[in-house]
Length: 300
Image (cartoon, rainbow, N blue to C red; front, side, top):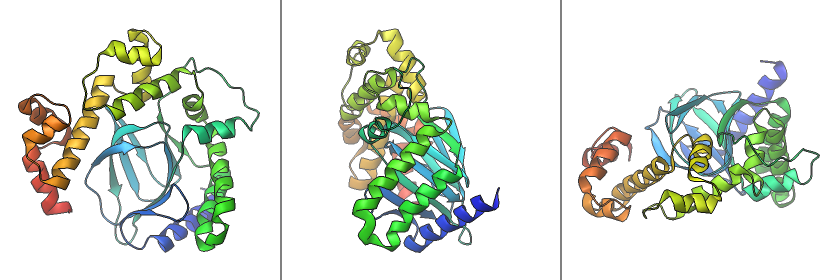
């Protein structure tokens, strides 16, 4: 690690520690910017990851997308270019050296705005890319992130400068080794953006059954092309994607509302409670009742 990079990491870590005194995810006065701090190894958390950029300054985290594992730590950033059901766990953290990270959410239209302002060869995305990737942080990207986070120290400049620094961050991601994955998801008509439309449909109607032909029609693809491109983007099939959404929502409902298992299974789209319990156990490692009791006793 160069001396410059070390100084950049140190400066950004200090900013995060200054504005996140307690463990958890902390919203900031800067729209779509969150600071994250954890002083213990966390329980695996399943959720839908919005399009976002996350940079780690201390500790390590593991994210599972389908059967694919992403591991990242200091000097790395991870990008999700579309909504994805993932399971994340902080795997290295302590009171003395807490996990510190900064997350910035963005939209496809914000990416397209940057693309329209730069001299980049826009393609139609014949080669669909995975919608999640890990890369090393370049000094230019550190500089932009530090400028954005530093606005927390003088918040009167946020309305004017935060949008500019956010555009710069997106610009440097696009210039990076995986920039094409972000580019293609923002370009209307590309294979990746058509899969994004299918993902949006599944997320908005996760509790309803669907025919694969309906999804292929939304994407304007053949069924075989839909399957291939969907798996390239999300690392899973449409059915597996929907199943993860249903089980994540079921777990949230059971934790939040103390509703009975049969009712929750029905609400998220299952017709069979036994099938729901089997798939829940397979995903989370415990039957629903045991899992919820365990979470309440140990983590809530």
